[in-house]
Length: 356
Image (cartoon, rainbow, N blue to C red):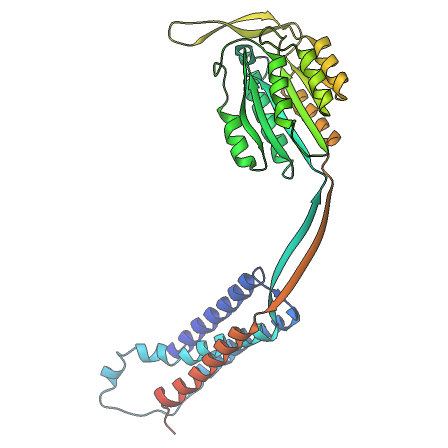
């Protein structure tokens, strides 16, 4: 194969690759009104084949005494194929312009029924018990995170409690911030104990002024109320007064569990098997008083199923109206395509002179 043919073949392959890559990129960037016109991009490899065949034709020869020097200027062999690239690129851009690329401006009118949810989580030391993987608290945080991610249209807040209660995150639609704050909770953030009534009362207070049509508390604990100045039943009465529905979850296996019972001098917790004591009756009473339900989670899988059940029970209704407007984007493709063809004409006519 002659050198001219090799160069022509390289340029033909390069032109075809560029055309294919251009189509692959543009199909995700624009909507094309007449996408069928893209079939004409097959003209690019056809032009390449013609260029390759043309380079193999026999041309008149000229004998020059200085041929050895001229043959060293290999850049001329490459430069002579530049018009092919300009022509191929120009034709490709004009084909794209004829396919009528359009950008789409769209927006939505979204109407939601609105559900405000407060996750109320026990962070007492007993939540480090290892009957869940890796422990009750971490498992609860992971499942709560998945629940939050599945409800992008709801305002969700986070209240935690031990012997006292505080708001870790107020009601928000910024779920990234909420999840970051959820990951930060650990036992020992406040005084020890299990103040279920205080945790519920704090959660209800967060929902007290909410204008949402549905107000929900998901209260999670692994024990019984043994601290705080508000009894769980009293907090449930307050919740009922404000129209807050409470779902209660008891977290812990049945029987015994490997639980923290003390602290070593180096700060590590000492674990022993102890009885799991969850006041199921109290949690069930809270749920029934407020129109909610009580669930018992004996392992991580059961806890995940409970959150999925609550997710089904508390669905946000969304009415979406979509609007869109298309803007024609062919102009610059046509301008640059015509410019490249014009450049190819001048380059071939004025710079690359051929012998008659």
